[in-house]
Image (spheres, one colour):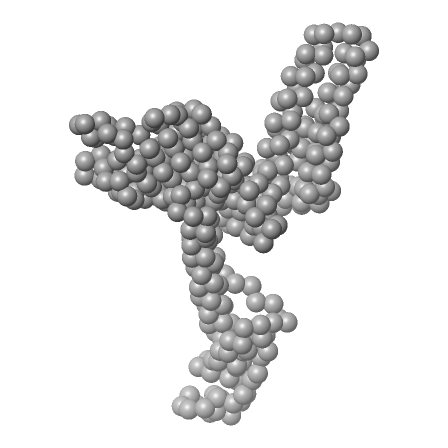
Length: 360
């Protein structure tokens, strides 16, 4: 109980409960605004963030209350020599330990994209029709995992193979920290079994690749602080009439952080030219931002290969075992894993990735 209490205190420190409570209060105030739903997209973000932060605060508060209650229960059981109460305390200790461990794993997700939804693509690789069937088995495994946790899924595309299974599938899993959680699944998954498609019932090894990316958030506006720009005005040149050529109505805007320069002299007034130039600057900054995001996503996409070609092995014959080749986490019940019981592998993968980052 002392160890669990210490671990919970560390989690509370990492989560910064005072800041979390302040953020919840601010979001509650924003959610109560009468004009909130004038912008449905912004309103959805506010309500979603509020719901998540409220749930996080409630969860850690409930765990702390349970830890305090457990201490009292244990003390009473010892004082009264009550075997039934002692057994109840031990059972609650095991349950509480599991939930605190799960919350601790969540605090390890601090990457830039970890809070986003996950977009998962599964592709069959070597192994012919068995690989296509294996890819479909993996698709079912992840959808069942999401269903177990009540995470909404949206299947974007499925390309079916000719004989059986799928060539590829792409789907989204929605929920807080889903990219951070599922990103440890990226890599090549290997299946060993007696092939149901071989009339001689020979053992077959097949492969499928899992790619996990964060969902791209649509941005249609870029804020440009005044301190980040320099505005120069000058006299327009070329045709346009007396007012255009004799007044300093043309505008040149320099974006200081990036060095991007835009100019406008088509409008009659300086204010009109500045407004038009700002629109051009925002469009250029948005284009630059999207290019940077694509590059970052490409880096995330490529990062899967750094763990080696095979990250997990699923053996159905001649023995039963699912083993992660990075974390050494293994389960002797492949049927349960393929039915969506993935949490042990996900937790181990997140902890392993954190350790690798600390060693780097």
